[in-house]
Amino acid sequence: MELKKLKGFRDLLPDETPLWQYMEAKARRVLEAFGYREVRLPLLEDTALFRRSIGEATDIVEKEMYTFVDTGGNSVTLRPEGTASAVRAYLENGFARSAPKARWYYLGPMFRRERPQKGRLRQFHQIGVECFGWAEAEADAEVLTLLWDLFAAFGLSDRLRLEINTLGCSADRAAYVQTLRAHLQGLRSDLCPDCQRRIDTNPLRVLDCKKERCRQLTSDAPRITEAVCPKCSEHFARVREILDGVGLAYRVNPRMVRGLDYYNRTTFELLAEGLGAQNAVAAGGRYDGLAEALGGPPVPALGFALGMERLGLLLDPEAAPAPVPTAYWVTRGPEAAARALALRRELAARGMGSAMDLAARSFKAQMRAADRSGARFALILAEDEMASGTVTVKDLSTGNQETVAVGELISYLMGRIATPS
Image (cartoon, rainbow, N blue to C red; front, side, top):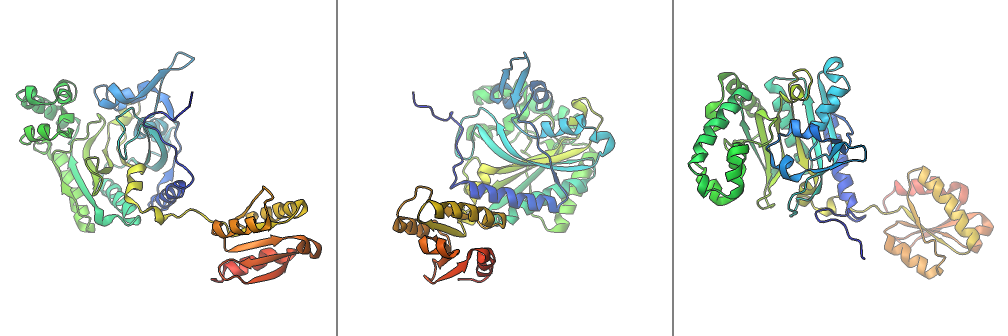
């Protein structure tokens, strides 16, 4: 039987990984410039963590989680998102007491058993940000500007649209859910089967439905902004005031409600052109009650996650070309090959990559491979070089070559690398 990867999973092959390394490295630089520090979280968590945080009546918990009982009889789940794990780590490791104000970020895979489609896989990758300890609107503005600047660093500003909304506090949200449910009852028979179910379990999700018929039917549904208390309205107004002050463009979208149970107050999505219906490349919001729901003290917090697969779809693959070696070793005879292996280690210790054919092919075949490798130099070790303790260095871009003593090879190459060919 031929073994294949599971549906909704994919291999990231060596030609693709330079783009992913580029995304990760640039994201780290931007996030750390804003004072965020990396946290590395487990892939596997107690199932109860996600049931209590995300919500029993969400599609993620009801249909999409990879959950199983381990050999110890424990129900465990591959993480479907990062926020719950981050809050668990924040509480379990005592940050709520010792360092309640914290800025964290993480990178890595998440798992949801959704219908696979372009930019949406069952194992997908996110870059996430969590900002703990600040209830002020300034924290919301910081996270939003950070999100925008992160995508701007990739040169994508002209393809993005930021949409924001407020869900108010938990009391506002609870009251709105009742109002919305009453409104939707009159539309039940005309909505899709999923939305009919959501009326009873999570009415907010009806407003997120991507089916055009459902969107038309709910176009005049009550808006959550009409149910928000004065204090939460003031908070949202302050967020907008700061964004206006720094010149960050946005659109208030009163239909954006974010179906996860833990969201409150400011919520947002970053949308991109050219991705079709699945055009959200990042999303997040405030979740002030989540720490308390997981057994900790009240901790104001907010964050976002961006999808790396979708970010990759927006980028030119040539933005991160595959690495090429500085040099390619061309040898004749086993003693020359052994010396080349030793010298490769010395070059690597100085940060210079070099390639080598280990199959002892003909001199001509090795030179052809050197030309194809993209290396600037061919480093030739044959009988004459072995006898004289030298290396012939051929500049593959010009065809010029020089004989260099083995002991001077590293300094010679470093000098030539500093000089354009």
